[in-house]
Image 1 (cartoon, rainbow, N blue to C red):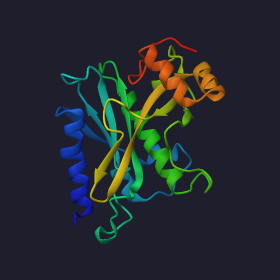
Image 2 (tube, rainbow, N blue to C red):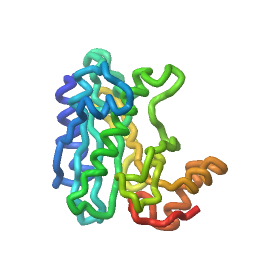
Image 3 (cartoon, rainbow, N blue to C red):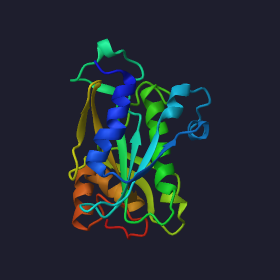
Length: 220
């Protein structure tokens, strides 16, 4: 049975390169400020090993891709207790795609914040009635995405990916990739009146999903 370290190594050194390419930077780990900004001062030091990778475009993908690593690490289980049919720890990793990199760091920061938020959700820091992040969730950012004043994108929606596997398998269990898509205030309201799934389809029609472009105009 694989140890936690072997599970971790497989995800980062085998699975991610297979899915997202060989050329990457990171890991950009979470810091205490990522949690304190969300109101959490007392944190598990193991959470500071979680982070984000940046993957360059590939021959089959023109976008820059960012993915978290750590939400599926079996921090709280022993190898003898691993269940491949169950979810590994929080059971998800977050992915974001943007059209260009150009020295930008906001995609890394955004995923760090969302990952810290998800860890706190999973540990009941916002109330036991608030589950971890999942498909269809819409999350306000408190400002324009990437803190770019000109951007109309002020929320993100978590979509089920279609251009890479939505679920991956580790020896410690499975996990889902939650694909992060930036949306506007009006699109958020449109999804409330209909559904997140309908909004994803609308964004796909207009070419705004799965890649998030902060400069784009609203479609609803």
